[in-house]
Image (cartoon, rainbow, N blue to C red):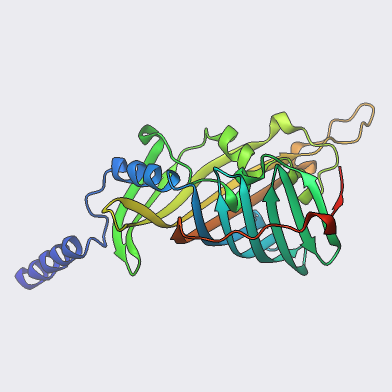
Length: 262
């Protein structure tokens, strides 16, 4: 019994020294690091965006690549591989003067999208109210200090902005009931390090959440279909890894090469 007790005490001590078994964590540390990171308006990053059907038996959308962004100048350049409903493509995206320029296997076109820098992987890191956070754990990894936590549902407006109305067309929702769209809790993994000025900044961030989308069922006199007949559950995962701040180049589109679409 004494030997078992000594073993358990040793494991507990090692756990505390390595900060790998939960550790003492304050969400204020997370919030400050997110604010410091979001204060950097010009940076480059790599990303993975994945949207699967909630049972995870199939993937709706998968995107992996990198981008450079300047929020003050409202500019973006991105290159990535996209797989949508099993069909793969290479994509280049640029934002300038409120327009999104897209080059893929369908050609080159542009569309007025002044909100695009808030879409999916291009959005700033989400920050949360401490009262909504649970299960906060702090540990060390090869990149820095990892904070893992959950955020209760209630951030619908932020997540709606993140997904945009594009989510309905991506999911083949013909007549969406947008007011019924709802979100589950958010699972977060934020890793921080110190920059050259000693400030805590993000190395990487990942959020995972579910979203329920509703179509409009066909009218049948005398029959009301169950919600499951016109509801679609999706699981969204977005991971962004920061590569450099400030000293990044952003390519600009040759605008005459692109056809405008509405």
